Length: 180
Image (cartoon, rainbow, N blue to C red):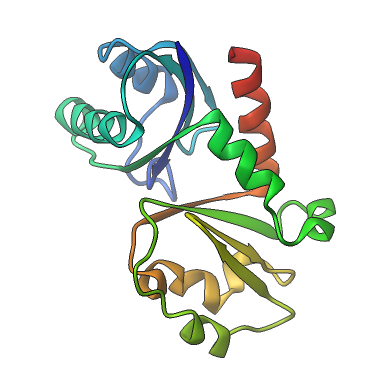
């Protein structure tokens, strides 16, 4: 059985799209997934599954959540190795000491025509970014909530994304390694 990580976008944020993690786990068990664990309430799920591709798992998870809870979250499924490579490929290792300022945006697919110049033109407060494969790294020392760049990432890349700060990525990898 392989270890996977599902990142759900848009659940339990700002009081909208409420989905208790216990209910999410029960829903995913119905798909035949095993050893399901969650990290915080914003849709980080570690699980085991055999013989299924990540994109297929993401589609099935989104569909069953919609069917049972009326919410259709965008789901990105990664293998543990994908997340570990994203950590190793971090172009801003010095930012790891302030984990809330470093965000990794996981992309549904590799962008075919990203508009990085648009993002470059709105950088502020020492912000830096890099696109490495299917991961967009953003170091926002002034805070991601105030960042105009952070708000434009998905539109500029032209693909669906979901972001996690460095602390969350580290905790999710730790949880996935224990599940392995």
